[in-house]
Image 1: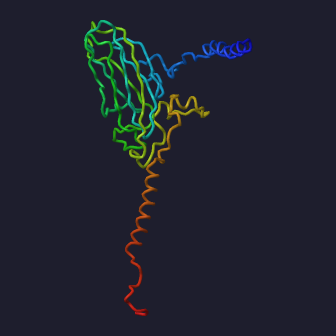
Image 2: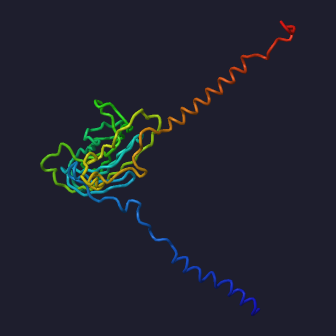
Image 3: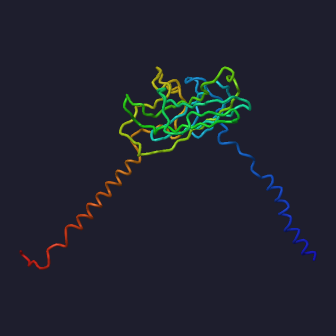
Length: 264
């Protein structure tokens, strides 16, 4: 009996000691993936706050302010810009608008999405979205196609009356892209992406002073000549060759007919 009690205590001891250890090893709340995201916005193109794609940037402002952010977009990407404005408890009906400009500060049209939206007087927030056209590696000078480089987001309330200005608001902006790939590939590429300061050089060729913008895609700017269109082109060539060989084998026949004597 004594031996049984000792064995039972020996079995229970690891369980009792493991419980506090398990409680101590409980993972604490990990910081958000966007913990390093900007918490303010610029007030013009020159002071636009730089954000990376996949980050949720936040900012506090007032109705009537212009809030600016900038992000990089490379060839083959189709960026989607989403914005959420949290409104004060008491406010009149407000119309908010989100605009996107390319590196040449040309306003880019949205393929679809609620670019302009009116919030009712009792609404606590308003959500906006703009899906841009696919960024092209190259375009004609006269065209307004989106090109690789920096893009600017401007968020503001439009058509406000004097009494509606200055109310505190909080904004969230997030940019994500879908990789379209070879379906949007074109022959040719830009010499340099359209980023602020790309044309500025110094006598010492200092990289920091040559390029003012510090944002670029995670894997760098694409060269513009490679796309999955090359893979599909090569695969099409192989399939065409196989089809040609198969057609030849089917149409050449089995050789000399059996009823034809040799030498004829």
